[in-house]
Amino acid sequence: MSLVGSYVALTKPLAVVFPVFLLAWLRFGIGGVAMAHWLRKPADEPPLTRQTRGLVFLESFLGNFLFTVFMISGVKLTTAVSAGVIMAAIPAAVALLSWLFLRERIAPRVWAGVACAVLGIGLLSLSAAPGAANAHAASWLGNLLLIGAVLCEASYAVIGKKLTGALGPRRISALINLWGLLLTTPFGLWLAWRFDFAAVAPGMWVLLLFYALAACMWTVWLWMTGLKSVPAAQAGVFTVMLPISAALVGVLVLGEPLSGAQLTAFAVALAGVLLATLPSRAALRVGRH
View 1 (cartoon, rainbow, N blue to C red):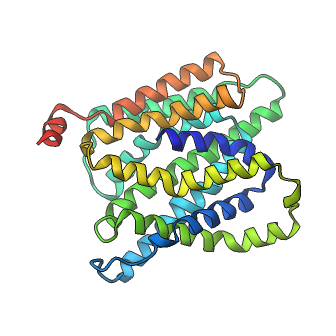
View 2 (view 1 turned 90 degrees about the vertical axis):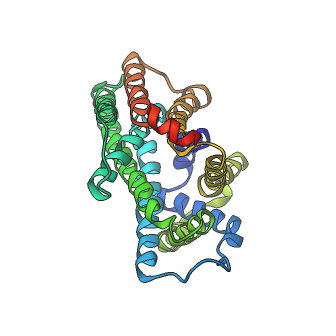
């Protein structure tokens, strides 16, 4: 989750150098090369059904393609700190979509977490950034795009619950990355034809490599490995590191200011994450057993 927050924040300098769809295409291309060996079908895996293929495409279209486009475009128009606040709404969005589509019960505490997430985003959007009104209008659009990215990521989590029953995590990651590459290739090729790659500084290529590997490969492996030794009821608590790391990278690495209104919105959003993800005593007892 710390890596996820870091690469969300670090897409801001990348989005200044690369057009959005070209950056997405390069990300999926690098990830595809790194995960080529994950595409191989295990001997014990059943054949893909039509429903599973449809879910894999939907998982990639929402959770990879649209999420990447919304997230890069949103961070480009607003700040990494704002992205951290808005991304803190992911657990609440997952709970809402699980309630709507999977008919899962939502505890009152989780509803309180959803309310905190909405309040945090509202406080962030109403806080006028210093400067011209145009900058504030751009930040509003950026915030809306990031909210779209949150809904896409939540859809990714809900659809993933169904896919994990048929496919392993590595194969899911490789297949949805391949779909993401296919979806962005027409745009990527068109933009690459007109783009001056020689003008890109060496440091940006290093940052692009880190972003692609972190987004496509490392975060998946670390999360799945951690779940082997941490009860599932407790795992959601660690999503709190996503907004924290995104905000820290924005302030300490990118030099973004942290206003009082942003700090208040950040605190409210983090409270929502904790309310939505901290396991109950019953869940902890089940996890220990």
